Image 1: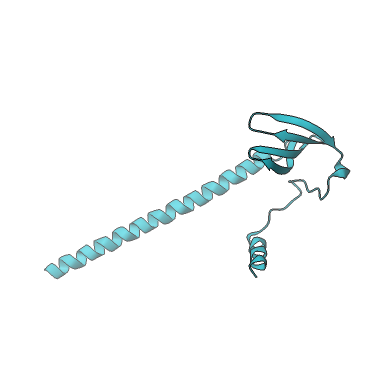
Image 2: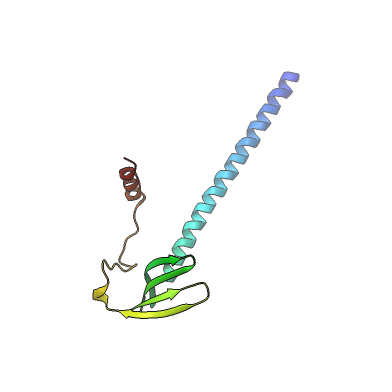
Length: 121
């Protein structure tokens, strides 16, 4: 009789563990898909806009210089915690290695792994 109670207790513990594991997997999968959905939604919202950040350079803590494309013009702006100031206009031909965000393709995970493996050797 005590052996049957111990077996039933172990089975209950295993079923509780299995249930908790399934709930954890469900929550992780849900978080993954919601994060992807939000990322794609934001990417669509940012697309087809009149303003794009082309390049950002950190100058000091909370101080940046950015090249921004507004319409067909390229502007250089200074960004601090409290202010954004216009610095100058740029000609498109004066910008080296210009790749607009919509033209660039995100790196695949495989490409990133290859770069990391190359650096570790």
